Every structure is written in structure tokens, then in C-alpha cells.
Image: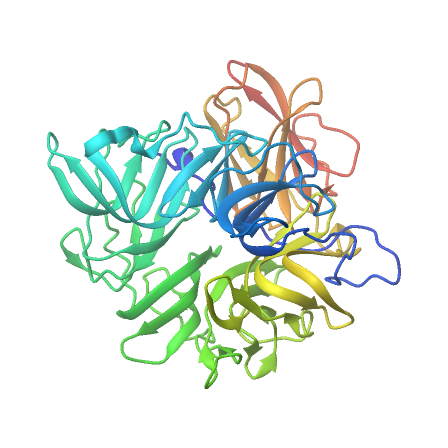
Length: 506
């Protein structure tokens, strides 16, 4: 598959920074009390914003009056109240965009939702009949045509082509059927996660020591067609739950999770060199602990890594302490992997008791920007203390204020756009990473026809289904157009970086 076919629709969070104009009393990342989810139980796996300001929340959810929580996707109003446009759709796990629709993980499978979140039953993973059965679900990536690359360990029974048994990378068509035109890939365990890299390759990790008949270290890199990239070899993974990946501009990759390499200590964040070796210039031993364990403090995994400006990352996870300092599920580190005190120095998320019992714990899954310049944090927590005020009613999803930090304090952002004219896709190459970057495509009447988050220095914009004509591609930062005006195609005026894009024949 070409780079355009699978680019940037994997579960990658865009770089963040504040921009909304707020009153003097508001602080960056302070809780916005105007938003409160009205749920009796909320353990969120993913939250996305719809074009009308509503939210789609995927997780384990129970509304007041219900007896048990269920894994589903449900719409919420911008205030956090329940939206009654529909009851719920399948879900519980990550949500990924595709062509105005959404794919969402649920249980061991994947479902497709319409733009408003209602279940799109035209995608059905059971449509392959005896040729494919979901086994142990892992991560997934979405192609521009709506097909999927499933990680995990799944049963394939394509006897005509000789694919029989458990496979760790499986290709699925846009209808949910087994893709019989592709080569499915086999390892000896389960790949728990997968992420696309800027060059169209994929990085995946889990309990594998062999892949395609070759020894591997547990975190692997594969070519766009799924074949093993033998130039990459990670350290041996004795225990492997890599949850999240952040590709970097220099070809290195940050990996977050709970990982034990070569009999050493369990690590939550490592940086791998382009050849897979651990980067000795990075603090790979960042200590993240869950101190609410019943007996002794326990190691706690990292669930997301989000760039913040040129020299910071926001990390979220199941920790209450980082390097011995109180950090309730969210913290900021520098690009060398060391804790910093710039933000998130309050107690953060409070302990959450699972519906099935156990002991209370905190787990923030991620942080996402909103079009208003504010942010959502989400996961499994009850109560949130932002370092200024305690909000015991916050749970599952919390909205945080942004700030006035924006382009005025940073260099202007520009980009290259090619090919132009284009037919099926266009590539946007950035000179610098914007904060909370978004690409917006408008038709000749100014109507928005596509919006996607900037996920790296190279981004692919799918153009399938668009009519021929001249469009305007805008680069936005923090919910506002970027400052620099590009004049290569006669774009003039406004605080934005934009270029004309010809779709179809010139």
C-alpha cells in the first residue's frame, strides 16, 4: 500500500498549546467548571469533537437510572450533558476519523460510526464468514479508502491463498471483509498496539519474539505492506505492553507503556533510535508510580505522549507520582525525558473504583484540543485538582482552559504542498510543527470539506470523492489560522498560512 493509503489516520494526538483568549483569573490548564459530564459512571477510552461542538465519548458508561455500565460510544453536548440525538453506539476504545465518519474500537472488534456517531452497519467485521474471526484485539490503523490494518492475534482461514491460522497483522476492506488482495503477516504472540510512521511504515509492539520467521525484539517496524523491516531491532522485551508511540522528526520514536527489556527494570517511557536501539541520550528510566496500591507502590504505565511546543511533552497514564513528585495521571517532561514543573503540578485526577471492584486507581488516557482552544482530558478518575481548586464532581472527562500563548511568540509556520494539481491525495510538508495544528480544506465557496489534525512534519490529505476544482488548504494553529500568509498561489490577507490546491485537471 502506498504512503497515501494509510497516512495519519492512526491513533496519533496532535501537538498542543493554548491560544484561546481568557480572563485574567483563568490559568492555563485550570479546570473549566462550565463543563461537567452528567454520568453516574464514566471510564473513558477516547473523546472526539464533532463539527457542531458536541462530543463523542467512547468508554465504559452508565447514565443515571441505569444499573450497569456498558462499553459504548455516546454523544454529549458541549456542556457535558447527555445529547439525545441517539442513545449509544458500539465502542469503548479509541476513535479514529475517516472521510467524515469514525472508526471505534469496541471489545475485541472495530465498528464504524456515521459523522454524528450513529452506528454505520454497512461495515461488518463478521462479513468474512469463516475466512476471518476476531481473536485478541490490538490496535488498528485506517486507510484513506476506509480499510483497516488490524494488529492483535486473529484467526484467518483463507485456504485458497494459504493464509490459515493466527495472524498478527490482518488487512480488512472498507466493508469489513478479509482483504484477499493483501498479504497477512504472522508472528508468535500478540501485537497490542500499532502506529503509522511519517514514511508510511508502521511500528507495532507486544508479546512477539518472532515475526515472519525472523527473531524480533518485541517492538517491530514493518514496511507499508506489512513486511518486516529488518533494519530495525529493538531490545528484547521480556514483558511488553507498549501502549503509545510518538514518531519524531529525526526518525526516532518515543514509546510509552509498561515494558521490561532484557531482564531489567520495568520502564514506562523509552526513546528508540531509527535502528531500534534504545537511545542513551534520553532518560529511559523515568519513574512513574501508582501509590494507591493496596500494599506497596506499584509501577504505572504511560498511556499517551503529546508534544507541547518545541521542548516539552505532556504524558498521561496510571501514575500518581512521577520521580517521587505528586502527579495525578498527567505530567509534563522535557524532550530529554526529565520531569519539569511548568504545568500539572497539582494533585490531578483522584482515585477511581472500577465497577467490578478491585482497589481505587487513577488512569488518564489522553489529552485532546478543542476548536475553542481549550482541552479535554479523559480516562478513569474521580475528582480533579488542578493545583488551584479541587473539583470532586469531575470524572471521566474534564475540560481545561487554554491561554493566550500562540503564534505571536513563535516563528511563523509555513508549508510545502505537492503534488499540485493532485487527484487522489496531496502531501503537506511542514517546516516547523505548529501547536495544535489542523489542516482545513475549503471549496470555492468557502465551505469546509475536510479537516484533519497535523500529526507530523509530513501529512497526507485524502482527496477521493472531491469534485474537480480549486480548493484552499489552510494551516491552523490552536484553533486560529497561522500567522504567515503564503503568496505562491496568490493567497492574500488574513492571519493564516494557506495555499490553493487544484484537484483534478488544472
